[in-house]
Image (cartoon, rainbow over the protein chains, first blue to last red):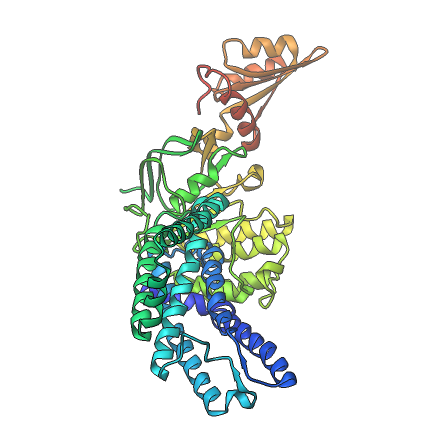
Length: 226
Length: 298
C-alpha cells in the first residue's frame, strides 16, 4: 500500500471532520432556512448553500493543524500526507458535488421543497445543467479546502505572526486591486467579465486557482515542523 | 558496521538560540541508550531531528543508513513517542488503528495486551484522557510499533510509579524478544538506570557525557569521613565538590578507584560511594558551566 493511500485511510479512521461535519453544517443551514420559509411562505432565494463551501476552509485548516502532527509521528512523510489528504478530498468532493447536483434536481422537481425555497439554486452560480452544477461544486469544494490548508500550513510554519501576515497580505492585495480597478474606472469591465463568462469557463478558472494553491501547499508543507 | 543513528556536527539554531551545537554521535543497534540532560539541553530537538519532524541548521544525519527527511523507506521504521504529542479527534482505538497502518512491524496483539495492562479505555476520546492515560497511549504505540528505531521523549511523565514499572518491564521483555535501537529521553534517571546500556548527556546543546552506563556510574565517587582523612585521600585528584560540617567532610572526586584505593580508604576510615546516574548528571551539569578540569570527562 502506498504511503499516500495509508494517509487517506488514516484521515478516514474517524470521518467526523471530512465526511460528517460538512453535511451536518449543510443540513443545519437548510433547516434554519426551511423553517421561516414554511412559516412565512416562499419564495425564499437563499445563498446559504455557501455554508458547506465556507466550512471546507475550516476543514482544510483543521486537517493540517490536528492531523499532521500525529501522522508525522507515525512515520508518514510530509509529501505523502499532503498528496494522500488532497487526493482523498478530491474524491470526496466529487461525491459531494454529485450529492449537491442531486439535491438541486430534487429541489427543482419539488418546486423548492414545496415552499418555493431556492437553497440549492443560488443566483448567478450553479444555475446550469446538473453536470455543470456537479463540476462547479466539486471544484469549489476542492479549492476552498486547499485554501484552508494554507492557513494550517502557515500556522504550523510561522505561527500566529505568519497567519496575520497571510491575512493582511490578502487584504492588501484586494485593496490594491480595488484601488487600481476603481482608479481606472474599470468596474464595468469586471462586471462584464463575470456576467459573460460561462459556467464552464468560471469553473476552469477556479480549477486553475485550486491547482496553483495545491502546488503552493505542497511546497509549503515541505518546510513544516511539528 | 553502519551505525543505526549517525550524527555529524549536527547543529540547530533558533534565531539567537543554539539548541544543538555540533553534536556528533553514533549509536549502534540493538541498544537502549539514555538521553539525559536538564530542561532546554536540546534532548527533544535532537529526537525531533532524528525523527525528521525538525530540520538541522547544519551538519549531517543518517538513520538506518540514510537521511530520514521525507525518506519513505526509512520513516516507517522510526517510532517517536513524545509527551506533548498532538492527536486528531480520535478515540484511543482510532489512534491504535492509525499506528497499525503505518508501522510494518506493528503487533496488534501486543497493543491489545498493553492497553489492557495500562487499563486504557479504548472507546474514550484521546482529548478526554488524563495526562497519565495519554502517556500510556504513547507507550503502547511506541512498544507495539516494534520500529527499528524507537525514540521515547519523556514517555511516562504522567504515569504513576506502578505504571512506570510496568512500562520498564514490558520494554525490557519486548526488547529481549525483538531487539531494536531505543533512545530514551528522561528526567527519572535513577529509575531507568537499570535499563540503560549507554548514556548520552546533553548540556546547552553539546554532548558532555557519552559512555557506557556502568562506566558513568563508576566515574564519580563520594568520599566521606573525617575532614583531615578525606583531604588526605583526595589529594591529587580532581575534586568536583567539597562539603564540610564540623569535623566531617564529603568530597566528590572524578575518576574511578584503583585496587589500592579501597584498602587505603579503610585505613583512613573514609567511606567510598559511587554516584548514581542522577547525581552524575547534576555534577556534570554544574561542571559544564565552569572551565573543564583535567580528569573530569567520562
